[in-house]
Length: 597
Ligand code: ADP
Image (tube, rainbow, N blue to C red; front, side):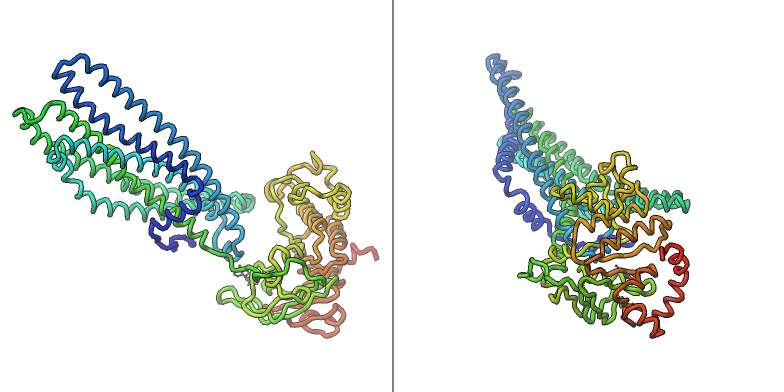
C-alpha cells in the first residue's frame, strides 16, 4: 500500500492534551475534579497502610499490647474500604466522561471528514478514514481514561509511600531509590521506539481495513477472476507484518518494568545491608523496619506501572496526533462568506474558459459552453475526454484551476454550497444505493413526502413495475449498494429519487453497460419524463439521446472542439460526424428496431 500516513508531523504531546481538554473534557471538569480527589484518596491509602504496620509490629507483635489490636485492625479495615469505594466511584465517573467525550469526538470527526473535499477523499481510501473515526477515537478514549486514572492514583501512592519511608529514615530511602535516575535514559529510548512502532502499527491497521473494504466491495470481481488466493496472500502479508510489529512494541513496553525491577532489587539489597545492622544495634524498631520495607515494596509497583505507561502514552499521543491532524485539515471548497442562499431564478449553466489539471495531467483546457435553461445539452467525446470532470466542476466537487462556472449568471462560489448542490439532481450508472429499504432509498430521509407524490414518482420512474414483485413492496431491503436489484432497477430508483428531489438542473450519465432492450426502453422513458422542463446535461452514449438533444458539445482531451445540433454537426462533417459513424453507427440498427416509427 503506497499511501502510508506517516507524513503526519510529530507534534508535541502537551499541546495535543490541551486541545483534547479544551474541546472535549472541559464540559466535564467537575466530574473529573471529583474523580481526581477520589484518586488522591485511593492513592494515599497505600501510604496509610504502610504507616499502620509500625504500631502493628511495635505495639502488638513486639510490645504485646492486646488493646491496640482492635484499633489497628479497625484502621486497616477502614483503609481497604475507603480504597475500594473511592476506586469504584471514580472509575464509574471516568468511564462516563470517557464514553461521552469520545462519542462527541467521533460525531465531530465524522461530520468534519464528510465536509472535506473530494480531492482529499481520493487520496485517503475509505479504510483509512474508518480506522481514524472508529479505531483511533475509541483508542484515545480508552487510553486517556485508564491513563488519567492510573497516573493520578499512582503518583499519589508514590508520594504518600515515599513520605512514610522518609519519615522513618531518609538515608534508607535514599539508598533504596539511588538507582532511579539510571532509568531516565533507557525510558526515553524505549518511549521513542514504541512511538515509532505504534505509528507503523496504525498505518498497517489502516491498510488492513482498506484491503478488507476493497475485498468485500469487489467480492464478485474477486470470485470471477479467481483472485481469492491472491487477495488472501496480500492480507496475510499485512497481517504478518502487523503481528511482528505488535510483538516488538510489546517487548519495548515490557523493557521498562524489567529495568524497574532490576533497580528495585539493587535498592532492597542496599537497604537490608544498612538497616539490618541498625535494628540489631537497637537504633530502629522492628515496626519501623517493617513499615519502611512495606512502603518500599508498595512504592515500586506504582513506579513500575507509571514507567510502563510511558509506552501507552506514546500510543495515545500518536492516535491523538492523527485525529487532531485530520481535524486541522480544512475543506478548500467553500462558498464566499455572504453567499446567496436562494437559487438563481434561471437555471442555465455556463462554463467559461475552465482549465483543470490533476497533478501534471491537464484534463480540461479552456473549456467553454452553455447549457441553456430547460434544454438538453449532450456531452460527447471519447473516454477520458473530461466529461465527468465537467460534471464535477459544475457541482463543485472540484474547483477549476482557471475560469469559472456560472449558474443563472451567478458565479458558483457565490452560491451557498448546500443551495448550489440542491439545484442538481445527478443520475449516473453508479448512483449509490444505501443498504436500506427501497422507500428510504427514494425519499432519502425526508419524512414529509405525501403518499400521492410518492406514487406519482414511482409510476413516472417505472419503479412500481417491479415493486409489486418485491417481498415487502416498498419496504423491502435493497442490499448493500443495492445488490438485490438489477442494473435497470437501480437506475429507475435513482430516477425516482431525482424526480422527488425536483431539482432544476439534471446531470445524467448514461449507462455504457447494456441493459436488455426492454429495460432500456423503460429506463429511457423514465429519463425522458425526468428531463422534461429541466436544464439537462447528459453524458451521452446512445444515438437517440444525442440526436434529440438541443445542443451537442463535443469534447476531446478537455477541449470543446465542436458544438451545435445533430444536423448542424453532421453537415459540418467534422469530428462529430466521424464519431457518429464509428461510435454510434452500431446503435442505428438497435434504434431502428426498437423505434416505434
Ligand atoms: P470522461 O468522463 O470523459 O471519460 P473523465 O472526466 O472521467 O473523462 O477523466 C478525464 C481524465 O482525468 C482521465 O484521463 C482520467 O484518468 C483523469 N482523472 C479523472 N479523475 C481523476 C482523479 N481523481 N485524479 C487523477 N486523474 C483523474
